[in-house]
Image (cartoon, rainbow, N blue to C red; front, side, top):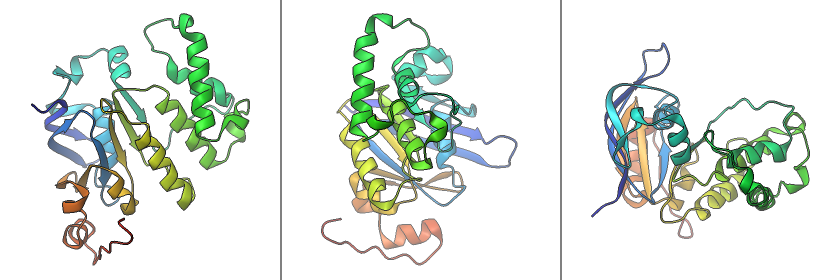
Length: 249
């Protein structure tokens, strides 16, 4: 039997005071790695914010592990879901280490008994992302790409069951974009579900599922092999796009 971790049942959300609506009806299995793609304004960020409850539903429901997401206390939800936004505000006066370390703590409990473990997790994460030399730096002194890596470390160190990433590599150079996505996916275990939005279509082959969004709804949904075709991409972006496979990629 399929282990469904998220069920978006005719979930409908509105973005602020705009006329834009997102309406999604889909199920997500535990352990899936999903890439969200689509034109600007298609609903990718709204999709992630709706799951993380940063945007409330106006219709339908989202069920996580058989519980309606609206009924869960924020403290419980934060243990199940981590969310890396596209353009967050991080106070410049935070030290890198202290900001990443804060991702280890639940809002509902005192974790002083786990201080040593959390320090080790934080140091290991910064080392993995080649940012340990910046551990004592203030956030305000970092470049845009470095800030993105720190935010990524803060999100990954939470080790949540469901991990959401909105354009996690947009400020990085082409080589590091690919390396960071690979790093995120390699941190996956069979019980973790990861949903990542990106404009880099070449990343799709690293995922086991692609969801195409257009005008606030699902345009196509399936494996990269069947979804990433000339016909589907041309229809999604309303441009002539040709898919060419090079060296098994």
